[in-house]
Length: 155
Length: 242
Image (cartoon, rainbow over all chains, first blue to last red; front, side):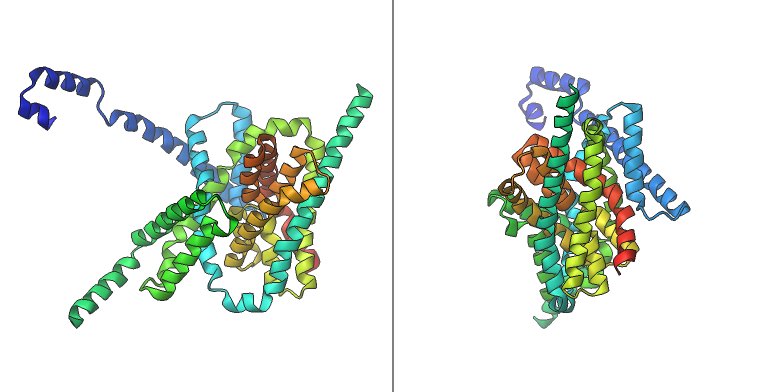
């Protein structure tokens, strides 16, 4: 803009100004932001509802999980896909890791506990996890195959 | 000269313990660590969470950043765990039509597989002489970290240990899981995915999507179903075994 004014190029100035009038540069973000906000508000709203239910009935299931279930039910019933909620939840899932930083930092201050209890922790992580993973995979495969076979019988 | 040093030191102390600085440290270091992780070809031992937490630990040890103010001002991130967990509803809702076709099989697998995941971890830890709080912390390991931490708060686990155990077993399970499954004769991508979702949650889902889209879909289904199942199962098993 400044260079146009200095050069005195009236025509280009007028062009750029007319562009400016029809499409202000902040218009796009002005449209996007409330859209993002509605997704954020929805997530918080379902979290709050979940917390209220958890609190009111003293349930063992965390409020966030109750909120998750309610949101699934809501999405299934309404059948609509909110673009804003989509965007926000993708962002949340993408950067979920950031929220675990404080917890992970805390591990470095567990020195004594880890020195005494490293064996059960190591075994549970490095033996029990792959063990139950493989057994579960075998189980799922067996159950899914059984179904296809019985399906063939019926067919 | 001494005055300048003292002045700079107190300025640094004040500003490092400022909430905005602490949030910037958390987010900024994560951004850098993630870049490093991606550019070095996603080596497990360079997992961004490992790098970030080590760097922040070193800062707390060797710089005027204080543990108390770090904890206090990181509460914002912990508070956000709940709404971020609710966000998992969106992919789960989209996966739900898959569940309808094989609902019985998958629910049966979830009930048994999830039970197995918790009981295997708990019993091996008890057998190895784990203390009560440690075993409780390990019992929470088969859900995504966000839910594990909330559950841990309710059943008296050691929260930093829960976070570490869930993340490490997720990363480890997602690395060894697919190869181990194939070696033992599991060829069905859906089966590997579902087992990865139950046992290796977020890490397993990410890895599954890298390997195969179907595997990824079933992994996210398994992980999301566990967020509902585990809070019901884990308190029962803790009462039963401890």
